[in-house]
Image 1: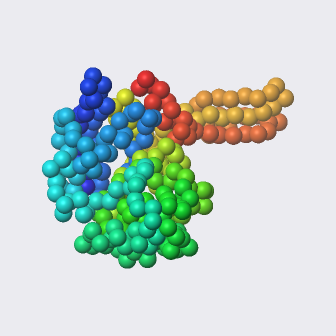
Image 2: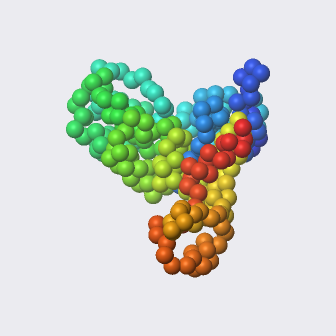
Image 3: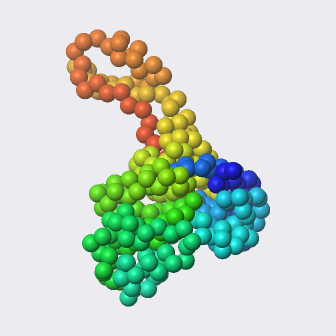
Length: 275
């Protein structure tokens, strides 16, 4: 059984179509990234999968159940990390995590979770006094304390400094290694490339490409650019055979470079074409 199976998902808000018949599957233990510009339909799609928003059409299965009708037992099997949260500011970090842990039958040890998200030093600090990055780490802790089979992460590293982001990436990798399935939405393409086994690009309510970070949108088949500098100036050639171009260069050149499209190049091309 796949943790997520979606066929023909549709959602409209009045005259506007937010999600226009998408198909999506996520495999067990996979980190799957959902990319797209603002207004592409990412948030609506994820909210439907989480059971927080009703769909207008299509079939959706999350952990073998319809999220639109699933009950409390199903909800205990998923973890959700929202972009924003409103928890009691007067509780300490430890009290907050322990409070949430009490809702779950298979909870993790709260102190281990606090350590995993890098908040050991703030465990006794009130939530209302945390910095933005520290608060984001607490959101993650609350999302994983129930030992979920499936975790939804919505822009999880917003507000993190570079070191904290790397530590969080290690946490996500450890969750996946333990068999947890992760659906990640992010605007950081380096984050998607570092973490995701596969990703989908949404634009205009439709999925315009699915694949690995290396192959999505034909990235692996795109021409390379061979550039070099000689006495006549800078040269650049687009080619499917960069080795042959390099081998054919005469002597007396410098700054030789062979580059292929980055994930960002491919992503911008995909959403540009959809517009």
